[in-house]
Image 1 (cartoon, helix red, strand yellow):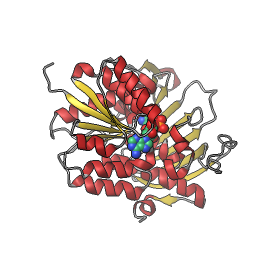
Image 2 (cartoon, rainbow, N blue to C red):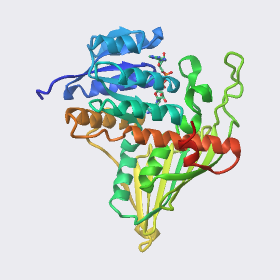
Image 3 (cartoon, helix red, strand yellow):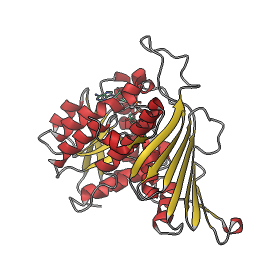
Image 4 (cartoon, helix red, strand yellow):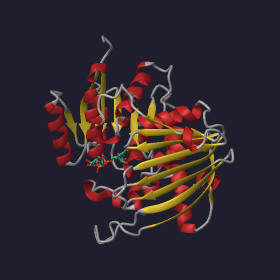
Amino acid sequence: MGEKIVNYGIIGVGLMGREHLLNLYHLRIQNVAVVCIADPHLPSQQHALDLATSFNWPLKVFSGHQELLDSGMCDVVVVSTPNMTHYQILMDIINHPKPHHVLVEKPLCTTVMDCRKVIEAARKRPEMLVQVGLEYRYMPPVAKLIEIVKGGALGQIKMVAIREHRFPFLVKVNNWNRFNCNSGGTLVEKCCHFFDLMRLFAGANPVRVMASGGVDVNHKDEIYDGKVPDIIDNAYVIVEFENNSRGMLDLCMFAEGSKNEQEISVVGDTGKGEAFVPESIVRLGNRLEGREGVKTVKAEDDRIKYEGLHHGSSYLEHLNFLSAIRAQGVQAPAVDLHDGLVSVAIGVAAQVSIELGRFVTMEEVMNDN
Ligand SMILES: NC(=O)c1ccc[n+]([C@@H]2O[C@H](COP(=O)([O-])OP(=O)(O)OC[C@H]3O[C@@H](n4cnc5c(N)ncnc54)[C@H](O)[C@@H]3O)[C@@H](O)[C@H]2O)c1
């Protein structure tokens, strides 16, 4: 293709960091290469090295992100470390003399305040592009439903219901994901994806959040350093938006007996659309034609060269970010820091709502110092 090679470094090469490595390998035809990684955990380093060796990619290994940045080897860094480390790593990247473009995994940070400080720091480095890894937008059935909604086929959107029924949280390196203080809490850690989608479908900003949830089934028999995990495993969350539309999340993490992991329903004043993952199906109907008129289509995206763990969404996320990088300032990242902040803030509001047993306004969490 003749384009200059874009060199990537990956900070944190656990499950998701290696997933990024695999995705970038499948993007090699676009002239990208992963040239270095940083991770203090020797088994993670070794797994990543083994993968890179199998691709014939020489990889420089660092134990910390600062050495990786100082090496000057990469144009882009992917941050795929535990959630509670995102803030300091992002600040170090943003404050480093060499500019790096950044793809940071969700959640942007674990608190609203940290997200805001990152946004403030990044404002001073306009030459750096930062994209947040809210990749569910790219899953083919979800992307198709977004296209339908934005095209106006459902009329004015009134209700967005997202059900995630799945398996419990996986085991992570040093079990960081078992505690709210590390992950931000379940409704931040994983549900920021869904709050991001709700906001996209609703086409408006959130106003207030009410949630009910608990630690009812999972991880109750686990103990780490004398502490039992405190992360909730099921919740209902209601989000009200500025344009009077509303969203509802139905999360259950002990629902392995489900055909789909995500079921999304978006209803406007003239029609209804649904997306199912992993069935990869979209349904579309309208009030005039009723049940008889409901169409079912298979959602596919020919650009995906690697399905990976997230139905090709990580591949499309990288493709999209690469095109923003190559556009050299003309194209903004598709999912920016503000999107990252709002998705975290809705999750924080939901976590607080469970604690306080009342509606929590976005103003309360956005202004909480
Ligand atoms: N987009 C998605 O759907 C998705 C899916 C899974 C995980 N994630 C996100 O990816 C991130 C990583 O999750 P994971 O599942 O890979 O966890 P993991 O525990 O499997 O891997 C994390 C890795 O980061 C390393 N690490 C810890 N501190 C570090 C530091 N200061 N510098 C460099 N490396 C460090 C650990 O040693 C480990 O190898 C999290 O933010 C998580 O929320 C996103």
